[in-house]
Amino acid sequence: GAVVSQHPSWVICKSGTSVKIECRSLDFQATTMFWYRQFPKQSLMLMATSNEGSKATYEQGVEKDKFLINHASLTLSTLTVTSAHPEDSSFYICSAFSDRFSQYFGPGTRLLVL
Amino acid sequence: GQQLNQSPQSMFIQEGEDVSMNCTSSSIFNTWLWYKQDPGEGPVLLIALYKAGELTSNGRLTAQFGITRKDSFLNISASIPSDVGIYFCAGLGAGGTSYGKLTFGQGTILTVHP
Image 1: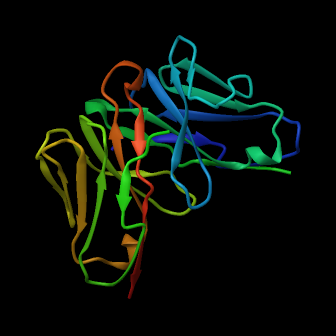
Image 2 (image 1 turned 90 degrees about the vertical axis):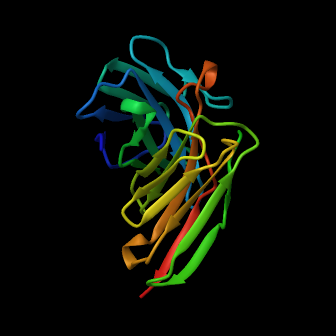
């Protein structure tokens, strides 16, 4: 299957700092990528849709100024958590479309804000 | 947001037993996907279903897309310890503002005793 990578796999930061997470499609081009957030023992919650060459669209309740998304190329989308707080600690996962409308997920990034 | 109703929430089985889990939705989806997630990892696509009534196998896994396009089941035959994990069903939005967006079930936690 298609491969999606994320970097870093885990990050610990101080409250108030910003953290950037990268999502790459390694063997296919993705005009659309998605960012999810997952809390322990819960399902994935869609945060936003990242569109190459245009602004991201955010789900209701997700602050666009808090979670900045940039889809710089057909293989790279970045999520920046600005002014991170402890409540932003979570597991962030991206996904990308491959062919036939199947979505493939990255391995996730675990964020811990102290 | 909307979620699919996935059951059971958890299962404890003996190695070698067969497993069945299902998802239902009040909305129609054109594509159903089944994922498995290991702890600390992103979901891995197991089976994708594109046609109503479609029955698809992937090794010991079998999944069917309901005729009404509002439900799906996943069967695992002859379970083995590495089947342990969380299984998610997901419906894929087809058009408009839902294009490409996945709606997830709550997940089924599978434990396999050797």
